[in-house]
Image 1 (cartoon, rainbow, N blue to C red):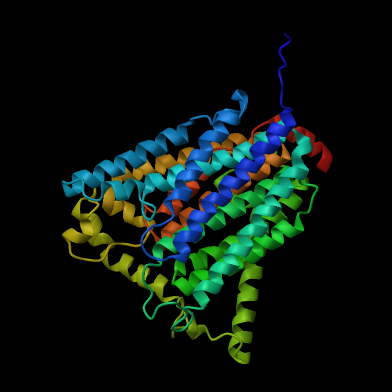
Image 2: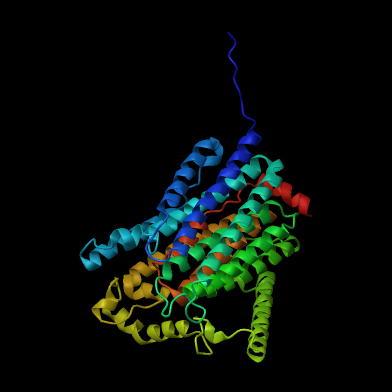
Length: 451
């Protein structure tokens, strides 16, 4: 009897993998949605479990030559650093209390943030690799991503409507904002996830405008920014606004990169000099001018009452940033003098003060030695960006610029608002510690089509 071997078309399998990847992104969004909708203790862990399980399924369906994320030096160093600060937590308090939360909780777990970032990088890598394998899939990829953004926008509007209906004071759902850290952080993770997906589709189809996808991204992010103020998260209100302008700047930058294709690697100084620096200064000027005009118009015409926002209250500046700066100025030297070489992660309790809300907290917490370890980790990440930027194909080069901007963006945010054990910091470092655009043969083809 003749045996029939049924083979599935590779393009069909690639389409299935793309839809699985986008479905997993939406499942992860449902985890965010539940925790933002029901503010308080963590909920919706079934969605999180489904997300990680789905990654395993996707891995099994992926051809061997597309499966592997190379475990590079930055990944090894980052895992080493996170293990080091976890050990320091135990040693400094002489107890394991709070260790699991510090490492894996969904509010402050450093390993959770980093692992989630790595897993998302793998999802984006899967989308890109399937595009490498079957360039004819671009229209299916665009359709899948458009579907994702339509659903995200609808659900975000539902979230906003739910919380706005519960508004009790000012532009807030609480008289005194509480329990806003988790939803504020999750809003940020979602915004970064969406921004990266937008950039991926832009780089995969440089000739296609994708205006509807971009419009949905801006609409959903703007609603999320307002939602951040409703729940009391000043962090996301500021970070979301900056992210929108960063994405807007980046998309304009990629449009002009064809005539500025660099013959050498990207450096950190590239953000401040040459054509890239010029584009940044332009957008900063536009942001400043628009902000001043909006403020004057809103006050003069009574369009927006800024006293209704938590971020300003009855002040004319941002009180939360001023409070952070005041704490830093008053206790930094006191904390650092306690144990300058190795530090103490509970120094604020030892000297009975508030802890520092800034990345500079790293010095008194883990000392000069730990700070040098952290600087080494960041150096390796930047060096990896520089390494891949030497492949001067336009698509790859543009993605390395995005990696550079996003890592710099979160380091600046941590410097102003948080510490070295902050989930958004390790989430972004996980997501951008590897490059998902690597293959020169694909990039050459696309570059030829864009010239």
